[in-house]
Length: 380
Image 1 (cartoon, rainbow, N blue to C red):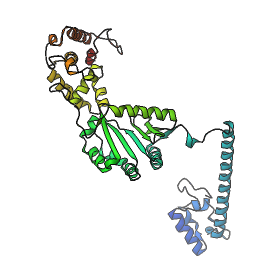
Image 2 (image 1 turned 90 degrees about the vertical axis):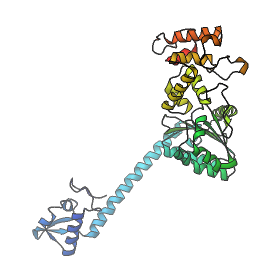
Image 3 (image 1 turned 45 degrees about the vertical axis):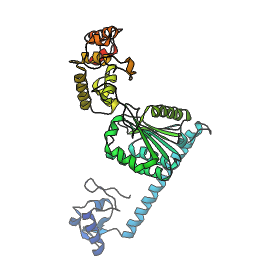
């Protein structure tokens, strides 16, 4: 606006400070004010709202409000004109750069890959896709037990989809079965939604009508990618469908491990340990805390009779827990804490190699000694 305030009174004539308003109002009512009255409000003189009385320099007379208004409007007009000039220059620049790309350039809204930076933009894009969805939504939800706030955040979208008759299929980890919130959510959705679980799932994925997909683009999930390229979306649909065929319905119990005292989750942990993963990685992949993971490892060691991580690797191999479940006729006769001989000479030799490799130091990042049994990597 018009005028410039002082350091103590940073305002214009259109927004007077409280002290300035009192003194200027008094000057307008009385026709003039003593100069000492304006000493605490130098802004009035600087903004030319008060000026010396030609007949008596000890007094200050006000500039008429009509003149002040004219001055303010003139300043506003100048600012608007300058803004319009900047807008015109910006439009001209954009049009010039746009012309460099040719007329066939697709608009941003139809881009095959769009980066969504920030949760507000992600949620807005998700809401838009929800409104456009007509038949099917496929989702993969990694992590463990679903928190109530996570379920509530997308509940309005799910209810809107159910109202329109859209089918929903959701993949979770087995750990999510233990959260009552998920069961309440599925009961609320009724026949519109179906859920299955796996030991592990891929990172979060949401697909609408097999035409648009959303995936995270940062570890904290505050940046996402909106994918509309047919090949990319088709690939992600194939990934989902293959995981779906392997998954177990949420309403069905998890299968038995076939080994007394070993739970389904402990079998999954044993298989990942046999692959050489650290506790933190195992916990993240199965959607549990590191503390819970280590508690399961301790129970696994106790059940298999292992006194160390190296020995646990041997026991896992002996019990056939280092891979997918085997046929009953292929399982060793002794499945728990037995001797190496109980597993047969070949397995005993393999277990011995694993124990030896586990006790041999490797260079940082080295994959281990050639020929080492994969159970040896549980010691790292």
